[in-house]
Length: 355
Image (cartoon, rainbow, N blue to C red; front, side):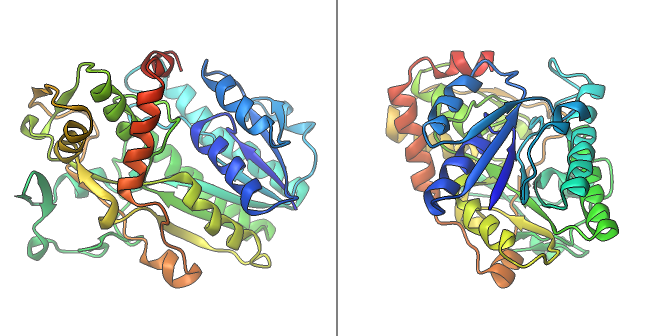
């Protein structure tokens, strides 16, 4: 089987490539990446040793895909991952849409020509921002949790947000571009008989991730605490009580392999996440870091930031029911892996800020 991984020089793409080779010897993997991030070369050297081939190209340019060899499956790990992309920072709104939506359409056109399958790594941020922000919350310990008896409507359980939760806008430009891409993936699958799967991921985290305040928050927080760099609780009263779950990307591989071996079955949309067992607030993460590295002051900014939500945990029961999938790497092991990386890479924040 031959697989194309887009964004292969990123944290997720690189991790998937290495784990796929480990779990399936003899698998042929090629990757495409525009190498726009200064840190890309670091990841490239790791999987290059495993025989993975790189095509230097940009999925936003159809001509860059024309020379690619035919493959059996595409794993789409190329995206601008920041929820603030297109609104704040260096990426314009047009660049965001071109990358996250136009790039997906270009890949689907390639799939149509190659008659290959498509595995999309989507995001939890396709769920409705007003519905999430409007959930009535209470504080337990140093974390926010929904007041379950006050919620009305489908899609919310004590194990997290299900696939039936509202995707009504606004979402964020980032979330909207990913939701539009999901729709196009499913439409191409139906129109041209292509096997397609949409996997909505929670926060992906692990060692080697280029963490920033608006993306890769677990990595950013641990590296910053380890190096005693400035940290700040933003929004929600400056408490740090906002909660997310996390998942190591290598845990996706067992699911992706099952999907690729499912004889062309179209899979629809699945939540894929760490769930309640692998969720914590920023305040809880700070406590964990303090136990590991010693205390460190965290400043507070009570005013809410654009697109932030108080609580977002995905319920991945459907993935377990259909595919027998569940995370294999515990929250503690993910945090420990990042911490060990932080201890052995004192310059990682500088690399991340350039990436």
